[in-house]
Image (cartoon, rainbow, N blue to C red; front, side):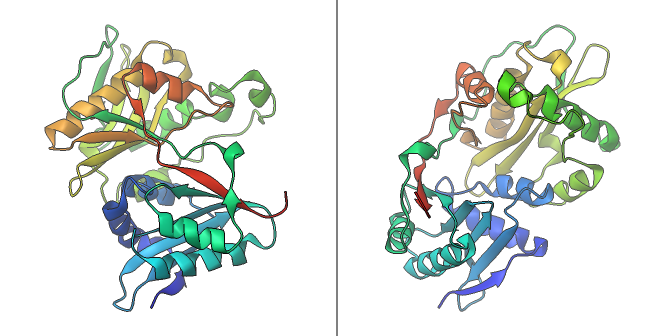
Length: 301
């Protein structure tokens, strides 16, 4: 029997450990931890448990965007979570990513009125083998782990790199952004992130510029149980862009993961027309596309 309960942040580690066994047919546990720490998970979430009390799945819904994840052979959880999605879609159009390796989830959604949505694009990602790889770093720049006492600078470099109006969006997108908008990353989010399962300070990287200011940052979530790591997030301060720093950070992540016995580094990216820069940057760095699934939709046409 599968039982549902509302999600709380205190359940994050339990959900992460379940996701560890399912990746790459699902969210990387580090990515889930990042979303939880920074309040980017769907606003409505349920967690599925079996009769032994173990987490066996989860689903979420916010603004017509759904998520559903469970084990590959768990028809009971797929059905119960699909019912929850339909109920929480509230009669409106809802879109859900479905992984190729989850035919039972696809079947459960199809039985409840979901249909394939080719216009929504693929569920993708980018991967690179872990291990030593050559890259160029401009003179005077160096990559290092954050120091234990530089939390303030760590928050500031993220917020500068991810200020919405300074992101490399197309002009039509930038024209709709409020100039006062700021990144949601705060000292509190960093405090939570540093206490999240799989966080490792030695894999929380920054790039130091020639003047010793921080030019970029990158958090690497390495799961030693599976050998998979995820980069989430990676950002470069606008004044230091177009120098190859994003490539250098990503490839240094591959080196560090390889040194820890990992086999693959993953980036949760897709070829988005409104935000092509990350996909194109990591392809040039040697990452290759990973086709993980498609989208399904329910609601009015």
